[in-house]
Image 1: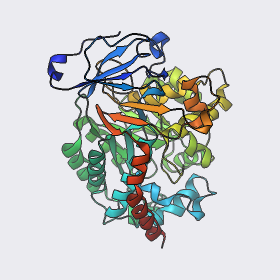
Image 2 (image 1 turned 180 degrees about the vertical axis):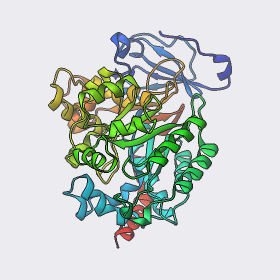
Image 3 (image 1 turned 60 degrees about the vertical axis):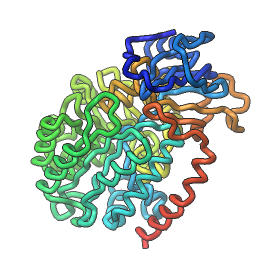
Image 4 (image 1 turned 135 degrees about the vertical axis):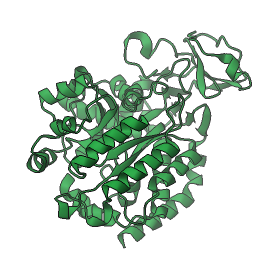
Length: 467
């Protein structure tokens, strides 16, 4: 039994549920015995929080109202996705983009994305969220930066959808202010003025950001990349974020082309520019973070900058391999992300676990990249990247975000380590998912049947976008 200080008096009217005796468990932590010690007998949930971790072979010490038998399932903290572009579910496998690297890939898709409407954003957000949830994801971070003239309330639409689904989220107000005529990549149709961006960023922060423990919705500010906005906007965004207590997010050092572009246009490498614009600090997390030199890695670590590691996207676009262990050793926080579905063609966090393990072993070897390591990146590591101390770990007092996976498919037959099998054999979906103490998925088959109308609507909107 592991009981820390939890004020149970505040939860007196809430039933207690014991998720009992899973076949294997990962707590989210990587240090010492914490990975197995507390939770082998399961966890007790009351209200939105975990109130007890039960040791293997023991009974819950608290009286419980319901027991959920988890003996045929693996128990994990809900997975946490640190970087996505929901709208891109509408542009998977676009022929002109399939065999391109980042810059030509973007240039082939920007004209298509300029046609996004409110209906596109709603359907894309809902479909992406369900795809993530079915893979065991309880917290999502999305980076939306495409705003045409008719798409001023994209973040509001996303907020409504994630709230309706009961999903925990960090929504980032992205921005682009440099179009092709200014030396940037996007067309004029998807950029905004600096004042439009800052005014809407403030509006959204004041309306949606909840910094409290257990928050279901937080906001961050996220210029698309240093070369897609002006220096003034980078600086003003950092100032506004500090004033409003928000985190900062952007793409950085994803490709060698990007680094060379920054040197050519800005006169410095991306990390130098980040520091030049007052972005360096623990409030910042970066998508991809591949092409750093050793000095830059040390500098990022000293400032405790977070990294959203996106292995599938990085492989599909041939961008490179993130130096995860070097970044972590320097002091960076490292989390996992699926990235957008136009550079991944999926939104499955367990697939991302497997791809991360395989890709990172090419860089660091089999003994240093374990299934526990990538599970840590997708749980506690990702929580740290998003600045959250209340999720990502199975421990008393933490939020009750839980994922259960059964090993009853062909791919698992013959596996001997259930926890390793989730990653190595490639689990495709959860059997149950709990967010903030509520079951949001209890029967995956029933959930899939309920999504038929959404799939049909989403597919039709995707076809209209390319018509």
